[in-house]
Image 1 (tube, helix red, strand yellow):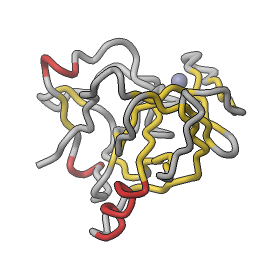
Image 2 (cartoon, helix red, strand yellow):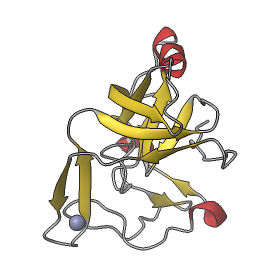
Image 3 (cartoon, protein in one colour):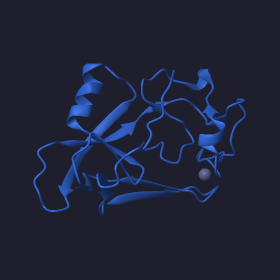
Length: 160
Ligand SMILES: [Zn+2]
């Protein structure tokens, strides 16, 4: 059984992307832009401290969350440093890390196994997938066996 990491939060408790130095790669085939942050990731936490944030499609996790992943020997991810600030300039005792999912399960497929439209060069999905209403799957043969993984053609896959 597999689970999607799903955003279900109180909107008062959220994290907001701050200005970061980025590197952009543009696919010459489809024009898709892949952006990655260079250096330490900056963001702002509003409200109560939570263990997992989706910050503009980047996943940020608390040190407590990271410890659970490490203590249970989860595979399929790397982390890098962040530099969070709190909106009211309150100090933040908790450390947070940018979660980079490295596990892969191949290309995103419809529930019947057929591929969604995607760019043949960068594997970015093209158009809406109807994820919630129709369901998705992947080919077991393309799954690398990692505990945490993402589709190859998910637009956030390089940093998710
Ligand atoms: Zn492309």
